[in-house]
Length: 236
Image 1 (cartoon, rainbow, N blue to C red):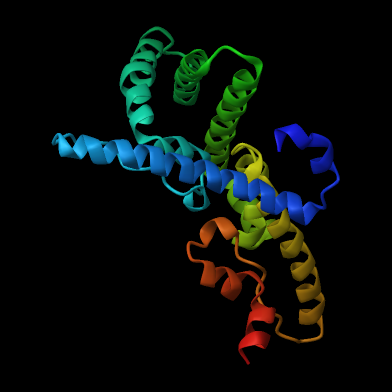
Image 2 (image 1 turned 90 degrees about the vertical axis):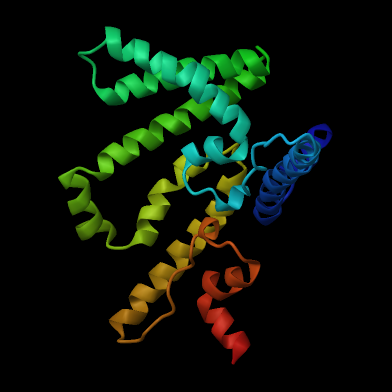
């Protein structure tokens, strides 16, 4: 695909969505096989290896992508980079908020990741986007606990589906691949949600909006909960 960039620019949106999701899943399977093979040999020597990567479609927040995809690297980073950095920062920068302590320690961790994977431009961009994703997630969690956001969710969003739409820019930072699938989901949440609103004005009960595909762990459930109206028609 990297050798045919011009051809990729000619692809329709649906093809790009499928290709983007495929690249993420192919990347996952690559490391399931390589890590699983080495883990099998480790168990022959009575060594307990870290678990294989979790499927990206089951990762719902960006911090879990690091925690569950490469568990061995995550434990190493936490033990030797993040915790020592956080301890030192907390000791010398006591006046700063705790969140800034954690984000600064995360920044130091991603500097190590950048150096470890190679000091080249594409690795720098990847590391910077990863750190940005973690930062946005921390800010989002802090914002979600405020009374202003609770009022906003209750009075304006009024549903978990609309809250998911607001989360899409953060989820998009997972390499940019998962975003294209969410773009497809968002498109149908908006279109189905709009028609449902008009249906309710005429006292008609419309099917629910599509469930986010990252919350669906079985392919049969994708059909059951993404386009509920089409699913009920096909079954009947």
